[in-house]
Amino acid sequence: MPIDGGEPREIYAVDGFVATNIQVTPDSKYVYVRISEVVPPRSSDWYRVAIDGSSVQRLEFPFAAASSLDIHPDGRQIFFKARGGPDRQQVWALRDFLPEGGSR
Image (cartoon, rainbow, N blue to C red):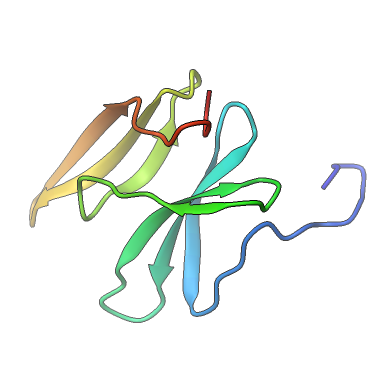
């Protein structure tokens, strides 16, 4: 929606879940969003959603508890934190992980 007005437009909706950690790709074609269950155990997954609403793709991270995703300005790397155990947090970087056409 333009900052000076206009109509908001829904690009993705999901019932019974919470959408958080929304990140826009540098090319502004996609958003990455974490979708979590509302009730325990609150499992969650990351999705790539086309800004034009044309596609939604579930991402398969190599870590079950990936959170706090951030996309590098070059669009070729992502950074996130993950649980490495009950008392351990880790910060990870993945290069060339994002799906084809999603950020370059």
